[in-house]
Image (cartoon, rainbow, N blue to C red; front, top):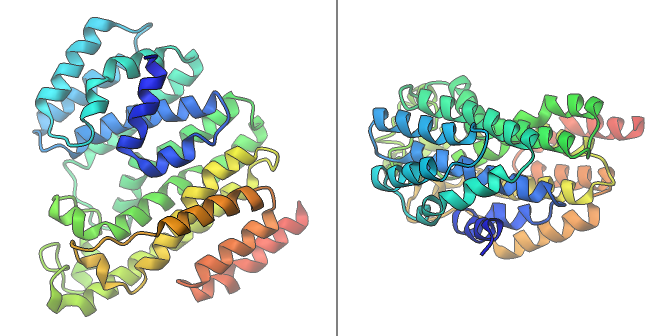
Length: 348
């Protein structure tokens, strides 16, 4: 089996939602984003592991070093593969780690410019992940910085690859760059919203401690039945904080070339899936119940995919869809942003 085929086969095992979107992109952009996602998922597996800080630091460095060589090196890759499998704890990532040689060979088959972009953003991601292994998230500023390292840099990478593949011009790259990071933060912040109970059970703490302290809560008490009222107060502030990033993500999509429908769909689908999850989190006590999962239905996903194809090239239609969806959780958003979005379309 070809290396790329192996990587495509692994992708849905580590992310069903991303696997849904990535195949929509035109070649070779779809391959480049798929490979970058799997590479970054290796970094994510190192971060999430219960291994010691020293071990994580060593594995981050060893894996990143493999990305910066002049060509694929089998011996070094096999050594790193063995270390990843023996030093980390993992579940569904096993296939990914076992097939590190195929992933790296496919990576080295990419143009130098693509490899440089993936490695550059990967180094930033790993450095930030390691930093937050030693630093707690106390404030929204901390949460923003963490989200930048794990998701915002991917927004920057996507923008870089659009330019590399001549889908956008240098001038448009500059305009899009303003919102690229926020696109990644929007998706990450919704994940942080809905996964609080499961994250706590895994000792992953992404909500600001100072915000919880404002409501006299801690990670040990926020999911307790007797603290539901206070917990909803924290949730509402998290909802409000995430809102502006969802708006920025929409601005990013509206700037993308209308003729690049498949690129737009790649962005539209995860954003509107995130919006539907965001709406479901509003005043929802299930967020704090580990036995329940706050997620959208398969029918909603199918509707989003269909609408992204039908309306993907129409900015006015996308704006109406966005405002209608977001107004459920944030009624004031329509008043605040409708005039901005519609005025923007009138100028284009």
